[in-house]
Amino acid sequence: MDSGGGDFYALSEDQLKRLLAGELDHAQFLAAGGSEQPRERFAQANAVWYELSQVLQAEAACGKEQTTAIPAMAGYSYAAQVQATAGELAQLAEPELRTRCAGALMEASVDQVLEAIQALTGFYARAAGNKDAILFRVM
Image (cartoon, rainbow, N blue to C red; front, side, top):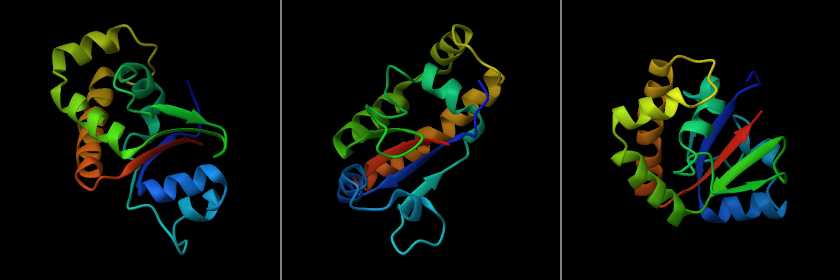
């Protein structure tokens, strides 16, 4: 599934609410150098976002909720869900992930997806520690 890729952003719940309400311009907020920025941008899994959306669907790693308010497509989770997802990701064992990958439509290799999941798990842990919300945006 070829696309422009997908990035994850850790941001405050207030920032997420303002983005969804249209009070915070998403283009400026997500662009490098804007006056207000997310706490962290995670782009390491950009090339395998579609695979992650399948393999980590049960954990809602690409967002518990979906919106079209932030083009082109975006998923998001508030801080409480981020903390739950971080805990779930930390508990996933490699054999389970390999089984999930075998059942997914994937262009990337299993090892590429597993490497991305490991990095994404760290991103979620940092976001949970900061009590951040997460925005996932497909470009």
